[in-house]
Length: 78
Image 1: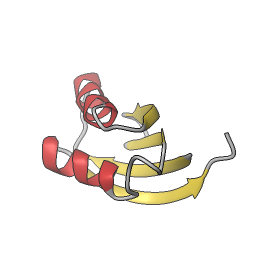
Image 2: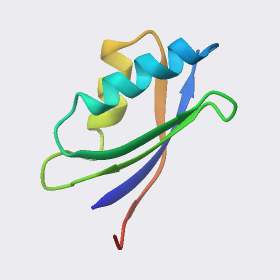
Image 3: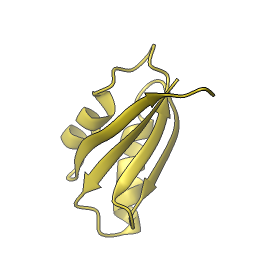
Image 4: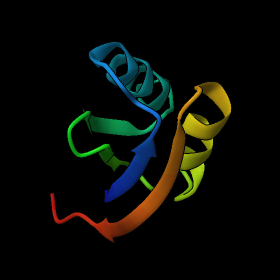
């Protein structure tokens, strides 16, 4: 399992958060996704045997009007 933090720009309301969360959870291997409007970021836990490190960033950038950039990715102990 991996944990990834992404900076998300362009969100202005809770509907924006919902769209980003839906884009993330549509990917295989996503275990948990939390998007914060205040912090303009997403924290995602995913199975790295099912998903490449760049996949979440690419999914947000290609399927929504928002821009994502990976802040950091690290192995999760849980």
